[in-house]
Image 1 (cartoon, rainbow, N blue to C red):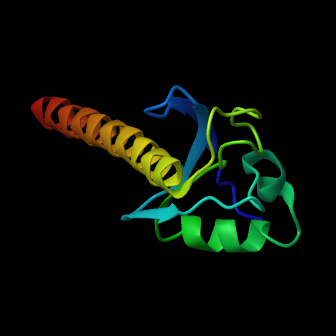
Image 2: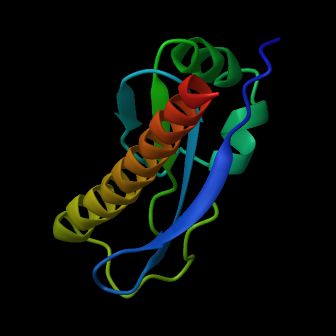
Length: 117
């Protein structure tokens, strides 16, 4: 079994709905669109999904999120509609992209410091 670990965080969508999102793995970003079947907590240990998540994480930085009204996200959102789902996807993607940029900057700074030694 791989030693990959997911990091769960939260982001607020445009309408104020709190969404859970997670990241694991390394490589180019791959965003898994949320559905009512996804759940960050149970997918990670599921015999159905775990091998897929592990395999993808060996080649990609996998970004997943729980849909509004399910999983670790707000259970009673103000609205469920296609437009809100698009906003949710954008909120999770934007926060993950920002985190990845900050991590890349830190890695570059560490490399510069290492070379200076």
